[in-house]
Image (cartoon, rainbow, N blue to C red; front, side):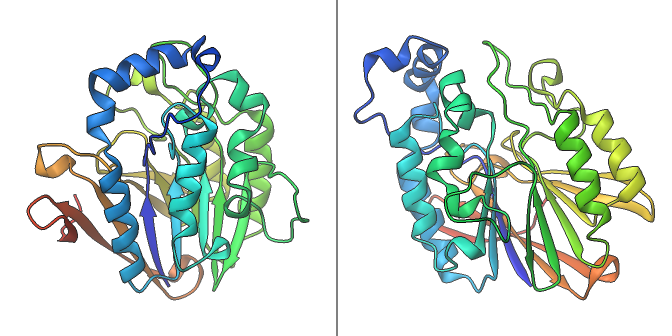
Length: 295
């Protein structure tokens, strides 16, 4: 099975946004857009990313959050258009939220992510129109995709995340019942200390470590840091690979930070399956994504 891992798309669209929507943390986010983020995540890179994904032989696409900038409805519509353009369809694309997707309490309590990206965030067997309860689980060809939400609104300048006790309890039960599958855990925030950790951390990552030590999984994928990261966590049967991918739309001058995504090939069943990783990075000269070696 070949799976693409994309993250931190930061689709930008301010059309139709009332000034009243910016009487919140969004005002500071808007200032950040004017200062740097608008140029850092240009729309042409999202188009190029989707075009490249359409050309690759993929069985599934996983999106680990921050599809938007300010969690505006217009931005969710732009992100939804991007996902709708992929040939795998909602059954072949799984998306979870990041902190930018619940940038303000309005988006959190209004379940904007869940409503506007519903086909891509429903568990198998969910009834039509049923909003997801995190974690979600989707089984595909011997692979169990378990998607969590670490996204909560936080005051400026924080960009931290939480799983919470109820979600962690459900996660442990899910992972324990899926031991016959190759279990891929999707989260947005890294489960280990990173750059500016005091501002950007997954606050209850220690409790996640405890869950994984007890029931394990075969792969943990995340985004958030806009850079490639590799680590491991302890599991009941050995080390669990933890892979963070850089932003899929980052217009950065350094080659190691440019827009990118990973492709994982899972060959075999369950914990004994073999995992290989490829990476595709945007080339400014050609305007295309090209093969590269993952960090």
